[in-house]
Length: 239
Length: 97
Image 1 (cartoon, each protein chain N blue to C red):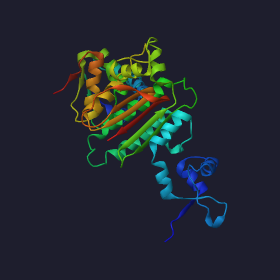
Image 2: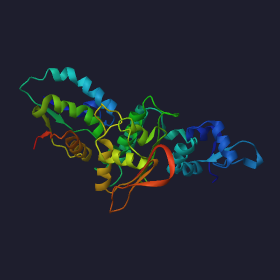
Image 3: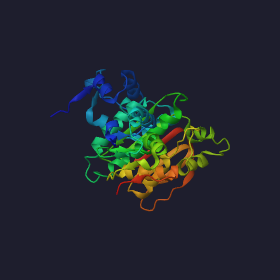
Image 4: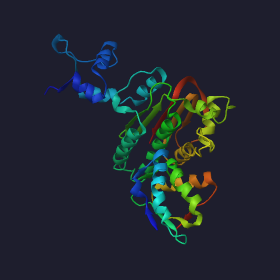
């Protein structure tokens, strides 16, 4: 039986992007459409769209690095939309075998990282407001990213002497400091570090050129200087 | 007085919403007799984050001190959050055994 094809409008709705974006992606080879019998109409296999949307890290990195558009289904322009999507993820995760109790710690980590992006960039987003929030619970991966000020610039508002992205990220994950002083804040990333250390979860986190990789059974919190400088923050949680 | 935290939601995540919840609770808190404690019941809450709790439980602890009592919970996010708040505030919550 021939596989049912989606029209370009159906594919646009599926991905949450405009028709023009799909045409552009087809021309550039990023997401190639099917054309029946040499016609001009574009069609898409649902399976291809599924595969296309599964590369969460690529969408998030390309977006924060070069501002490249990603499927709108992953975009949370406001914190209330983020909260609604997080709640949806929570209900799905608590059904996953083995995660009946652990789900709340994963939601806590994703919630803290996502909420930080909104809290620290409110009224200060350099260009696009909001965050990328994608997850694949079957694969056990959550990706969050923002094109905000990043940890260094945020913390320099209270500690102007911070010398580098690496030191700033280290401070954010280890000290009770807030980029919104005199408000008392800044316990979220400390708890993220603690939970990742003690639970079977991995974390990859970047801001500026600072990278945190906590992976495997012998997890040590360490911030290193990476090869590239990214805008805002990017986090990948694996479980 | 017993407060069922789930009345503020089952997924308690953002600072903003924690702060809103604290403000919304103030009129009820004013009715609490001076000699009575406030018990926080976590049952029904799926996820409690340190950001939300820092805007709600930390100021309650300041206001009520020993009169604030946390009821037992088997939720992992509740445990983790309470631990980090105690560390950040350098003050322990009174827990009901």
